[in-house]
Image 1 (cartoon, rainbow, N blue to C red):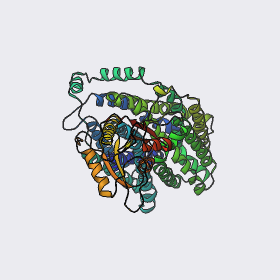
Image 2: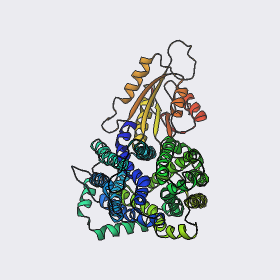
Image 3: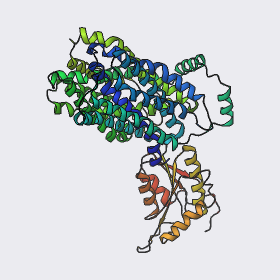
Image 4: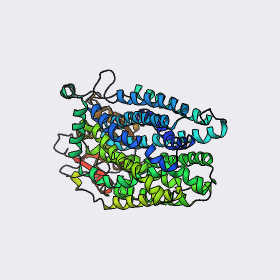
Length: 580
């Protein structure tokens, strides 16, 4: 799948995260504007963890057992959730009583969870396995983009829209929430109209139609999946406990802390600057998201995620002690790098560990691992805030930083499983990622090279990888060197060699092919092409056209094996009947 197609498919996540960003930044201050006390904020936010605990696993299990020829598997739930978000966001600014605001928050969280879980499962359904990492991290970029936009609306509208309604809610809140209502449904509609789900096989469709979809059956499916989930998911549970408890503290109390340390009790100014901080850390998320894959490949996901949690620890402690609004803004860059890791790396690991047919329920279980710490925080932190932290928002952020640090230590305590039990897409240790994203093969038009091309196609098909067919040629302005093979002279001869090697390829079966005629030595052309992208595999015949008779390994494969940074597949071609 092209990057452009993946961007369109993920576009709806922008609107969903715009809605979530408004909830993160504006709902708790809105509660306080209509009379809520800071110590009651955790209980008032009980909707998030409770709906996540109940809705996402059930929706995931239900979507696994759904198929409509018109609407697909995940789309019906995604669209219903987006529509619910839009309606709730439109109504939110009209609230005048605290109970009404809490009720709307419950409806908003139900809608968010109904759409978010199927969206993540949709990516795992549609993308080839070797593109899951890129797809989920593009989703992390849209997560950051949606949250940036939401915080920007708060930051900007607060300064350009004046006045307040009769219920005491400023007019800028109306404009921000109505913008979110439009983005929530519009972006999802664009993405879903351009994304096609793969229909199940006839056997699987028969199973889907025969399986019960009652609430009891869904609860049993969630329980069965939890009992049989991979060991890697169990090991992430402890890390999730600390990191998600910590981040909820930040979301709930950053404005309270800034009001105390920076803005001399002015809550409205603190809320506005919270929007600027949200833009900063989500901007860092957008920039850093795609850097995580090569870093995880080099250092291992375990060390990478632990380091990212340490950055979040440093950020929280710095913000808690800041006495200047700009000083509080700088550590948000570190926070954004950690947020990108939290939103991307674990989902990539889980998506590559679990069976495709149960993707929905397992993504839902991952969300349970997220919301259980949030639920614990809702019931415990009000008491902790009043009795252990002295009712201080600054102390709350300090504790958040400590918990991020403990989460980093817990991540280091998670020992990598054996290689055969670990995700090949995002290993915990520094073992190289083994899923091939690209298969590079050379051809000179000979029968042996054509055979190598067909073997490469088989490997690329099985790996769901892109195939790059390379033909090297002498441009005619340099002297040929006797290398034991016949050189192709001129670009046209190289293009002809490629065409002859692909003449029998069924492009309906395999269409992701690139053709490259390169003026270079054959081995150098293969090596340079493979080095442009990690996760490549070079396929080369053991003897090329004109190789010395009886030679076990020709000069080209010998040089490739000697210098390659990636795996090399040597295809046995010497037995073919080639012209002398």
